[in-house]
Amino acid sequence: MVNDLKNLIGLLALWMLVGCGGEAEVHTPSGPSDVDETPRVETLAMIVETSEPTYWHDGSEVNTIDDVRWMVLAEEPGRDAGYMFSIDESYERAGQLRVVFTRDPEVNADIDLQRVIDGRFERLKQLFDQQAEAAGLQEEAYLRALVDERKAEVAALQKALTDLQTLRRGLPSTDASRLEMRKLNRQIDVALADVIAIEKAVEQAERNNDRKRYITLMRVR
Image (cartoon, rainbow, N blue to C red):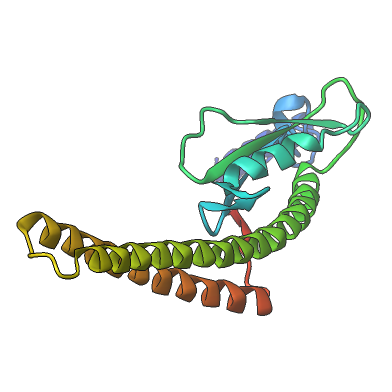
């Protein structure tokens, strides 16, 4: 009886092995669901900002990020470049600019958008560095001219005070005359303090230019 049972179990095991082909099942990819289909990134963005909010351009003080905007727009890619870009006008962080790069669907080009952005930033930085150097020299020249202007104002105020004192010599002092003299003296003090402050700014601007310490363009990571 025991032998018959063992024989029966052996026959069942043999039948199951033959029915399964005698091999373990191996799962092979049979459709798209089995393949890694990570979509390629089609859009990337670059955010830039400057180390100072304003600088000198063509004789006036302007927002640096506005100049960066025009520099970006001035260099449009060609039709066969394989990518397009646009400025994100909804990005509202002060002093920063967000530029969005998109692979051009109409051009059959296998481009690396990240490499494109890196190259664009380097060229943009070169342009900005040139403008920043010119801005530093313009600022120094403006401040030197401003010192001369303020010194001329001081000289005019001092002359007005001297003329008033000459005119009032020998005359009795009045409240009006004393008030006018105090007013002129106060204006002279303020103008002299202004001259000193601007002269210090000139010295700082001169040091920055000598050391080539200009406003810089930075990429926000």
